[in-house]
Length: 378
Image (cartoon, rainbow, N blue to C red; front, side, top):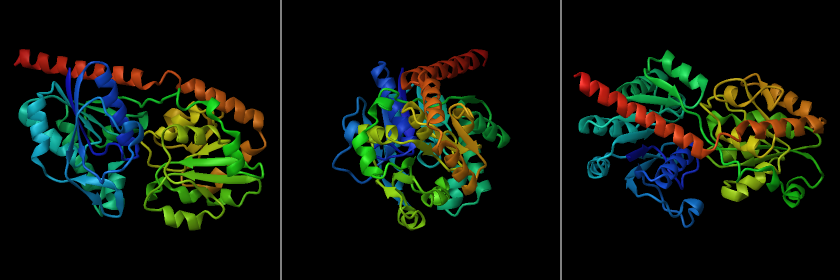
């Protein structure tokens, strides 16, 4: 099968859209499918790590940094997108979190008569309100325009499926995300790292992700005041400086990736994600694969990932006190933490990127079959 993936973000960017697009393209290419990726160009980095050599071509489109969040790039109009689609002659166009570049990809696919599968992955309405000064209703109108034109929309969680349906998006199917349970593994727990992070033997409570307004990392502030608890933050973003002030005593590690990130995950005692705009929440899966109990708000993607009181704890959204109480519940319950960690890992073992990629191919085939049936009926 010939596929063009048009994505709003791609490595070396560090975020969920970029990671999922990379894993998807990699699986397609390694499975023998002729794949091309079209993505915004960013500032080159000296070391792209595991993404340095891709088994597929990447077409980079000129871009500018998002106002207020330079780590995210907005693609500029370019003939490279249409040229990539025309030159590759795809059977399917895959639109990863379409909004700017993806909207143009949808238009180009329609013009060429190529079926399109649109992947909804980010709370774009919230992003538009936070970073673009755009009303949420305006953003949803754009989202509906793109996704209604797609042959199928794939959403990562039951909550996202419902949200799209409530906003008038048709032909929505569930397509969750995978996790690398070989990389993210309890065996990577590092006693030397633990001693460096918590020399007094404190309970290590960690957050991994972007340091951005929608992640609500400031809700971890009460944890910093707990005796015997050390808060560890891995990630970067526009709120980094503000959070260093808001979370006194927390250890900020900056952006970490690959095996180094896996070592950090496995060395935590508890993982906490306070964000309430998660359509999925990939870092929860990575913590679970690492054998770490998790705490998250009972809203959005975490509802699909956290089995309350079995793999972790779900708490009231936007509630710093609830997060604090959940940590206190687990602090002196070593056996419970161990049981939650084991159950969490068991819950994600079948969610490999290969299985998720094969499921995606099933969606592609169904879309192609639907197109063929409609063509025959016409």
